[in-house]
Structure formats: C-alpha cells, structure tokens
Length: 311
Image (cartoon, rainbow, N blue to C red; front, top):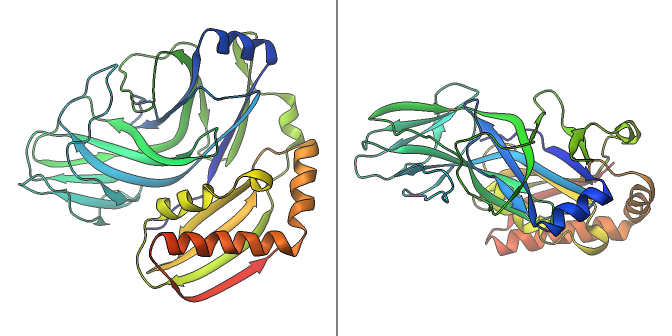
C-alpha cells in the first residue's frame, strides 16, 4: 500500500499566551477531518512550547467499535488492520477484520461489513510535538452501520485548538471553541501563530525554506513490516543533535522500502544553520544509516539489498 507525502504544521505560541495557557492547564489538541467531520482527538499535548511541530503521513489502521459516546475514550472492539487509500477490508460474520486488499474509491478506505451493527473507525500515524510517533484514533462513526459497505474518507485537513481536561483518543460531537482549521490538501507545510487569544498566519513563514533531503535509503527487506512501525523505531532514535531531522518512509512494492531523512520543516535561523552544519559531515550519514539498520533488527527483518545515496 503506497503512502503519500509527509505533512507538517508548525504551531507557534506567543510567550504571554503560553504562560496563560500553561497556568490554566490547557492542552494543545489536534484532530484530522474524516468524512467532512472531526470527532476524535488525534493527539493532545501538555508539553508544548513557543514553537511546536506536528507531522503525519497517510498511514492508517481500520477497526470497528461498539459505540460512540462524546467525552469518552475510543474503544476498539475488533482487531486492527493496516490499510491505505483505495483499499478495503472485510469484517467477517465472526467479527474479524481480514487483511486489506485493493478495492473501493481511490480516495477512501472501505469497510465491507458481514458482521452486523458496528461503528467503523480509523486510526492514523502522527509525530507529536514531543517528537514521538504513534498511531491513534482519528475517527469513529457516530451511528452504527448494518451489513454492507461503508467508505471512510480521511482528508489532509486538521483542526488545532486548546482545551482543558481532554486527552488523546477522546471522542467529541460538538464544535471545539476557538479552533483553527489548516488545509494541507495542496501543500505539505503550514505555520500558524497563537497570539492574544487568536490565530493568524505569521509573516515569518516566508522565511522558511523547503526541507532538504539528507539521505535516501532503498532496502529490499527479508520480510514484511508495517511502515508506521519502522517510522516509530527510527523516530525514537532522532534525539539530541538529531532532533531536527525527520524521517519519511514509503513502500516501493513488495518488501522494498524507501527511507528519506530530511531537515525538520519550518526550521529557521540558528536551528537551521546548526542542523545543516551537522549534516554536512560523513559521520551524520553513517549514524542515520546505523539508526535504520538498528530499526530493521528491532523489527526482526534483515535486508537483501540496500542502497544509500546523499543529496
């Protein structure tokens, strides 16, 4: 299942607003639009700062739930299956989801339901403001479906807001207060500023440069893996001096994967200069390659061929 381009948003918070939000214990929240609605907190963060990056790739998991209840956590009742746009999965009479296969609209994910009353749900992979990647729910149908087919259409549109007493995977059915919607359908990056209690697009956005790809690795693996698992393993190693490096993983068919390391989107000034100086050296390329090999080993796979190129 091919994946698309990585998307990234930079959320900047004015210092006075940051102090007020932290003092009142507000969480920074993100939701992703599915079927033209938002109804699950994709991620909520309390460890946000004046400059925060949230990113994602279209790496999804399909599941079924027995209910939808606002202000409650998503409960996954079925098994979960990795799936991509233009694919479908069958929920059997016994309530088991089968592996994804090609089918349904190219822009959606289709659940073929042979079980009975069920609420279709979708999870997606994202990297939070803490730099940690995880797959969490983004949508649960508010009303159950009967046997038949249902199409879930995730959009490259996200909603960002601040809220008290809310956590990741919380369902909601009412509009969020003072939220900003960010549409990345035709773009890969965006920046928003929260200042004086309101949202705007900062002028500094024009200073941002497109992130430069540092290293590309194409590897034919000895077994199948989940792309989001590989992204998660590698991302967990990108700390310290490598905190401003992002990884993007895609499939090239079969068990062949393409791994691209690049600068974090939205870097400016000293941070951009520092990461570019770091990545000029051969040591950094060797270290990123080592991160990749360590991640393969942690996932229990080796490689038949591996080709690494630098830009």
